[in-house]
Amino acid sequence: MGTQTFTGEFRYSIDAKGRLNIPAKFRKALPDTSEDTFVVTRGEEENIVVYSLDKWREKEQELLMLSSKLRAHRAYKRQATRFATPLKFDSQGRVMIPTNLLQFAGIDKEVVIIGMIDEIEIWDPDILGRYEETEFQLDAEDIEAIDKYTRSS
Amino acid sequence: MGTQTFTGEFRYSIDAKGRLNIPAKFRKALPDTSEDTFVVTRGEEENIVVYSLDKWREKEQELLMLSSKLRAHRAYKRQATRFATPLKFDSQGRVMIPTNLLQFAGIDKEVVIIGMIDEIEIWDPDILGRYEETEFQLDAEDIEAIDKYTRSS
DNA sequence: CTAACTTGTGGTTAATAGTGGGTAATAATC
DNA sequence: GATTATTACCCACTATTAACCACAAGTTAG
Image (cartoon, rainbow over all chains, first blue to last red; front, side, top):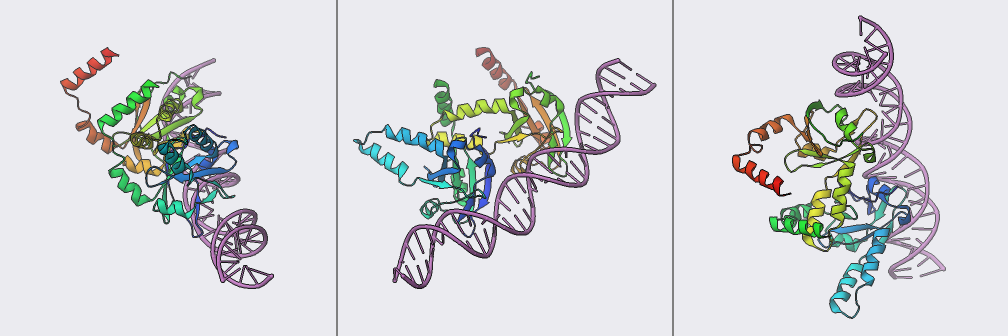
């Protein structure tokens, strides 16, 4: 088990006790080394991002390469770490997301979970809708830049 | 097994349990590495696009090269994966297409399946008809541009 | 021409997934 | 240290999905 790629979109809801189900498909995609654990943190947008424990360890390695002498580096590192929380899911596959993250993402009950290959995003449906109309839009320039980027690697 | 090219057009129907048969011809065209799995996602038009698992893995590799730090990259990656779903077909060669994709493509029961060499399109017959009269039309200029494009590669 | 196989379609049963709730353990508060 | 709130650990229910089995029409092979 563990092709380790997350795809697709799901609409779930947080129950009265604050538990959120992670799609079984995503849990199955986890490698054994992730031992039933996801790491959640703030996203760049108004959402929550979820990594496998493995992926998070990679991110940590990346952060270690930054210089603590540079203000921007410190800020970035701090921003990336301060909200990161490892969450082990229960026997039903649910996790309890910290309230500060829920607040940040404007989530109360309803939730959209989006698979992003190597990470997962959790959105409030309304906020997601707003972003779709604005920030998600890509113009021809963007596309071209992305095309170049992938070709050059 | 696996010339991996899909050609021809088929008219099938989705049964009461939401199962859609994939033409045997297309299933046979799959390489063994695709292990009885297709990946379905939204098309650019009002339809569903189907890739072989192999082809999808290529796409994934490309997406993995993008940076999660850049807004445009995230948006592109999100758009590409949100609706992508790997579907293993049952012993009869049928798949269960997610309802959100069916809705997007305006499909209820009747379906037209079109082989497109390296991918497959699934259309609602009526919608396909409408598109044939408009968006599918090519003028001389289009053809000329295509000719140039293929020569330059 | 007949027999064996393939193909598209239909249904039945068993397993899984998502959701809800109860109780014990743990942590926080006074 | 007692009380309350929070979290972890079970157990339960329902709908959906997956795994089988079946069959008729059409093809292919002998």
